[in-house]
Image (cartoon, rainbow, N blue to C red; front, side, top):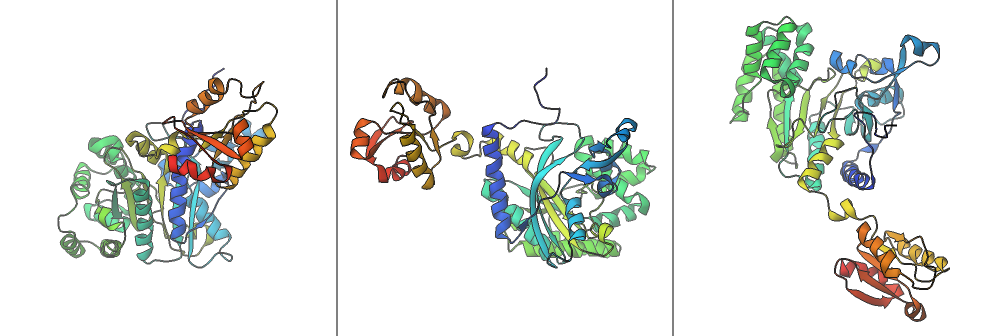
Length: 446
């Protein structure tokens, strides 16, 4: 029998889980400092909740759940695994609008599922770490979202990340100016968003398959490519005179975001990317992605989606958010060796040795004392057959193999004098200290 996980899924062994939890804790801590509240939603949503929210391409990647009984035989589905955390958030806001504050800020860290082709850093089951603000059209929302995301990456140890930003209304204005019919704007943006996967020739080919001429494709590729403008303010002024009302609105929003972000940790990392499209169809305003140089794709992305909640509630409720890709963050941090040593390889701070036969109660009590003081403790489970027999051969070797930095021993002398002998497994140094002071010994020798 094949014991491996399903394709695109993974098992997480203890070291993997420690790394993941470390990153999750950093993300949650930063988001809470910005006043965002936690939210969780079910893994399974009604299929009608998800369909029609992500565009044609996104809808094809939804993991559908067959109906029970006779429905399964016909291939009918009425439920689906959660595709992202944004649409479930929109459903929750529509459902509980009367219970939630008018300006609702939430973060959510949960797995999502997509029937995608697995590749490096891309899986069928993966965690998203979302932060969203509901209820305001102010660009201060975007500035805070980008600042929070920047704080996360700085705290994780990233220095070279870039926050690329663009605007859907600016893109729509460029599409209109190039001659793309309004009904094909969404389709064209989805294709443009795949440029890093299929290349310029692939974009040109797919645009042609949708009925857009080679001249239109060339115009789009020319206008939506190239380096960021050297003088951003001058470029914005020039564009405002050339574009329609949507384009002018987009330029003004971007102008505000760049100005506001100069007061935050995001300012130094913010750059305009005219080719950034973001393929999901629900975006309506500023859009952004977080990138590092040595990774194909992004470490996170998001944007404003002022119309999505209204699809559920029937009222206009503005919203904006950003999602960090936990799996890709972990890949990059692992390749760069960015995890603290204790996170990677240390399951406990100290291991308590069982020296006496039939005195497990003594060592359980001592281990509990240390745990109450905030120390991570592993108790070696097997007591020796005779007092002190084969301690070095078995228990110390186990601690060394597990990467536990300290071993604590209470033998005959220690028990008589109410002391503990602590051995540093890296240096081999041993000290005997009063039992009440043993915790400080771990700190001094580490």
